[in-house]
Length: 220
Length: 287
Image (cartoon, rainbow over all chains, first blue to last red; front, top):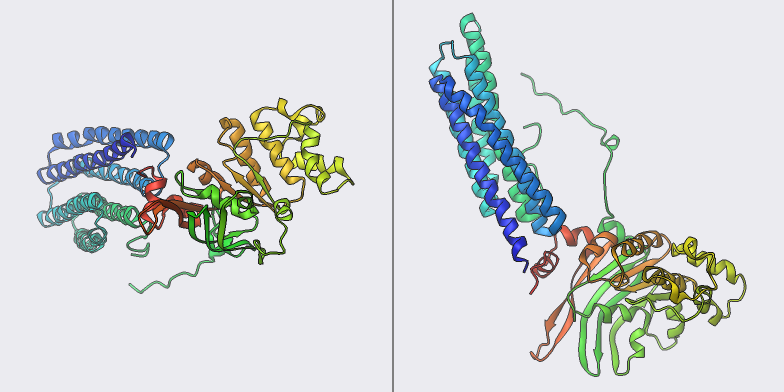
């Protein structure tokens, strides 16, 4: 038994979960800022992204060393590759939180439409739940739970379509148009967070079974 | 919105990337050895039991496993080297190009000409470089074109450029890596079909090891190679197919013997082994 090697594998997994917790804080912060139109909080979310990026780079470095020094194979190799993929997915989710924060800053002077903000909040809650479920499923190698993310993703997509419909109906009101256009991008960012959670789910199946499948095809 | 038609894509234009041969592709190759329920016992003590597998032409096949798993015993069955050990008994069947390797009419010396062997420790004869390579052909009475045969064998073993100006010097003056390549040249000189290598690089430094591994890649175009190795990364680097052997207790609980656990494309063994024991061994969690 290679004790130090096993510790390194455990360490990168624990580190992935920590990165996940940081990313979820960023998403929550960005949405709170949007609801409260809190510019200061937006700046904090944007600055916080450096920490998430730093986590990702440290993860990449650890994995590079692990591959070079320990030459993992079989299930260990799959785990290392999956952790690296998931770390990138999380880093991207962090970027989406930054996008939301930046758009919130740009629209701070506009009066928000509450029904639309509510829709975005609903999407964000689901996206957060999905990321959490994806990370839990990964930690427990729960393939069934990972696969169930596709259904949750469908709910986000549905809310996204509703938000877009609402914005289109605002076309007649020029003062709300700019705000609405930017909120479409917020919705798109949240929708992408859901997709990334599904991607993390796919890695769970890969680690557990050695088979990689897209849970839903590109036409989805 | 109308439903878009799925565009038809000519996927043949999308390049395929494959780093290694698939098991299906390898299994379409000619069967050089067909082994069924093979067992070996020394003075009644079972060393290896129940091995069934095929070895394919122009393929590097590696045997890996812990000490005592019978992999060296097994490789010696392919050129009847176990015949030379008093008390050794081989059961089951080994067919070589569909004929029984252990048939009464088969001459073990002819078997060893066609199935050459290279050992862990380079073992050149205390003779000149030339005479080492010419030894086999001379024994076989192949006198014609001896110079060309020696040169060709040394070239195939990637040694010619290093020794061409000192063919009459003693082989014992060569480095360990050169001596091992000389032993490979010596095996090639009798026009074998298969080369067995038992830990061929375990006594060599990394550079000499790399040369031997490169050589295996080159040689498999013309020969079938079977290699026993303790070094799993070496199996991963050179072999197309890998067989993992392990140790089982005898049924009566007294003593242990080697068994074949899993045999598959090397990529499969090192990425997705089917058996837990293989997984534990290749990931270093064995024992």
